[in-house]
Image (cartoon, rainbow over all chains, first blue to last red; front, side, top):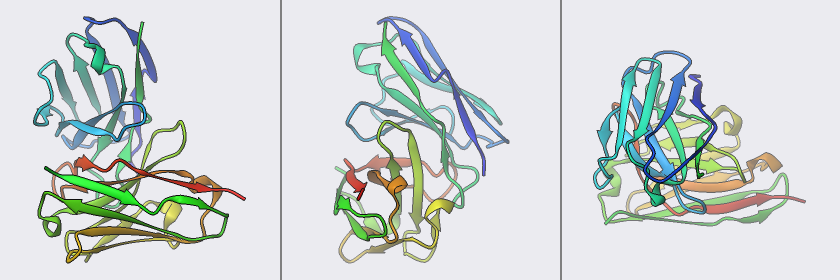
Amino acid sequence: DIQMAQSPSSLSASVGDRVTITCRASQSVRNYLNWYQQKPGKAPKLLIYSVSSLESGVPSRFSGSGSGTEFTLTISSLQPEDFATYYCQQGYNTPRGITFGQGTRLEIK
Amino acid sequence: QVQLVESGGGVVQPGGSLRLSCVASGFTFSTYGMHWVRQAPGKGLEWVSLVWYDGGNKYYVDSVKGRFAISRDNSRNTLYLQMNSLRVEDTAVYYCARGLLYGDYRMDSWGQGTLVTVSS
């Protein structure tokens, strides 16, 4: 199976900060990389698909980039509603083995 | 709008069985793949299973193979997960999610989840 590793595991930041979360794959996943946001007690929500495509309704302060084995999720100017946990997910080794990163918890400083 | 509503969770003893359901509305259920994804308390997301739009192909994470069975009834817009030989480590919130069956296999809509607790 393809392993996904996110860094950092947790992050403290302030409203207005620019934040970057990294996701690394144990082998190339081409551009089949998605990002989800999860708030406490809620279901995950798709944010970005295929590395850099914004899901409908997601604010433009979110962006994604990368290719192959290294990917980033960037929030250009943190808003209070962005404090949540973020997960990457690879869709390359599918459908046999869909895997998520371990998550990055974004907290208010 | 797309809506997915899970049910069937509860408390069960180790070795027991449970069947989860997920009722879909707001889209053409029979044209989408459907996933089960779980989240143990305080932990991250773990993909569990995927069923093809027509029920023809089914896939599982290794840890549930031979114990869990995914199925769907397109006439009832309902997804199921039959869970047998349950273990303490199966304790989690179980989410159903709508999935694309090509490219990045993204999961673009999720239910609110149902809690399964395996405990003696």
